[in-house]
Image 1 (cartoon, helix red, strand yellow):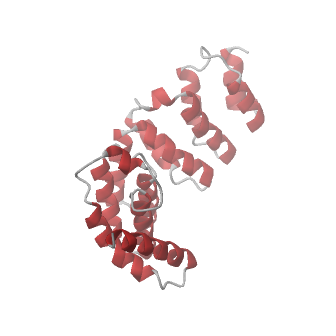
Image 2: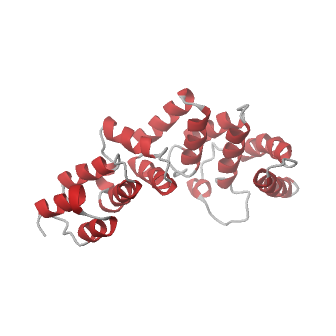
Image 3: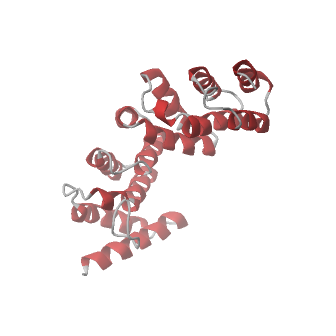
Length: 224
C-alpha cells in the first residue's frame, strides 16, 4: 500500500475495520504529516466511529506530534472532550494530557469562563490528568469546583480531589509520586469532609456511596 492508497482509505473508502487495518499495517514512512492532518479532519467527522478512530490513532501513532500542536489543533482536541460519544471524550482527556502545558492552560481558561456543564467535564479532565505536572494549578481548579453552588460540580470536584489524594487504600498515585511538599493534604481533607457529609444523606445513591467512603477514609486518617 502506498501513501495515496492509505489516504483514500482513510478519507473515502474505509469502514472502521478497513481503516484500522490499513493504518495498523502501515510503515512508519507512510505515517507522515499528511496522515496526521487527515486524522484531525476525521476528528470532526459526523460519524462517531471515525472520530474515535481519529483520536485513538492520534494518540497511538502521533503522540510526539501532539506535544507540539498549534492553537487551532489544541482547540480541536479540547472540543473532542465534549463529544457526545463517551469513548471519544474519554480519549480526548488522554490526548490533552499528552499535549501538556498548552492543553492545561486551555482547560483552566475555559473553566473560568465556561458553562456549568463545561466546568464539570473540565474538572473531570483535570482530575484524570497527570497530577505530577503543575499539581498546584490542578488543585486550584478542583478547589474552585468544591466552592460551586452547583451540586454536580461540587461532587465531581470532590471525587477528583479524593482520587488524587493518598488518603485512600492504595499504595501509590500521581500526587504521592510528586513528593510535592507544597500540597497541604490536611487542608484538602478539612474542606472535603463537610462536603462529603452534606452528600452522605443524598437521595442520589452514587453521591451517597462515594461520600460515605470518603468520610471513612478521612476520619481514619485523622484518628491516626
